[in-house]
Length: 81
Image (cartoon, rainbow, N blue to C red):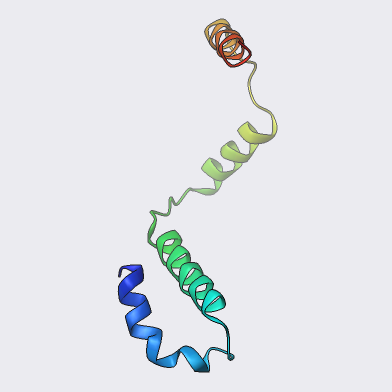
């Protein structure tokens, strides 16, 4: 549902939104849309072993290889020009 459609749907109830001002009302609709979008994204289910491997890789990442180090050095040189 588009933001315009959501506004149309809720415009009749505007005064009942805790006597909020229009700004608060728009923020409310924006947050509702963000929540809907976040909930519609794909959820990845992992086994316990996969979860442990994932967390382990975040907590103790492998050392970057030479190719990655070279790319990082190149990137840093470009952004520091």
